[in-house]
Image 1 (cartoon, rainbow, N blue to C red):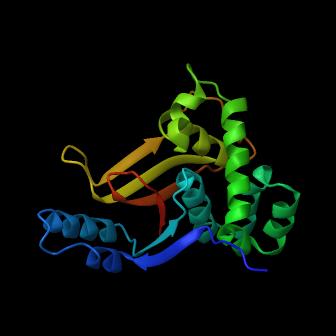
Image 2: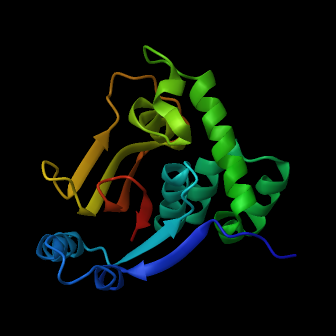
Image 3: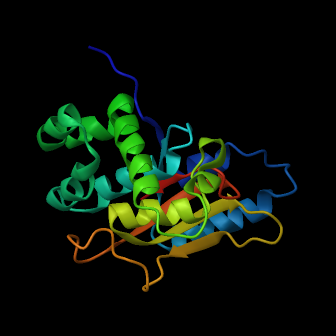
Length: 200
């Protein structure tokens, strides 16, 4: 039976650059940022659905491609329903490409954001319009055992750098004490950190 894919496309950074108009006033900066990103050892981007859960999807896809399979499964299994859990053990790549299963994982992670929220204020303020931002981004990281996200963009706003890091403060409660070594994750955004994709 056919299923909708959670992964939109895999592209090289050079392919992404080629999609920009050469005559654009920002093209020189785009090329410069692309060279800087590649100098960190990255060469390809795996894009994911943009339904407000792209942060969750891109972290999961990144972990699949960069961690050993047992560590990947262990990080994600807590948020799987019964059917997804069976497939996660049998065919983990099928899970990361299956939109229905990834949406189910993201939905469960969102529920945990609300139930485990330990910041001042409302979690819904940080999930306004379905997108996950601010402290809800930190919650996603804590729930998946991620201590740092480094996000790179080709087109930052005028006052932004092409690179942005999010670290989890050490004084927060560890929501995944079962994961000894917390992950560092690298993500990508075409335009000013508005949509996330896995950077490999």
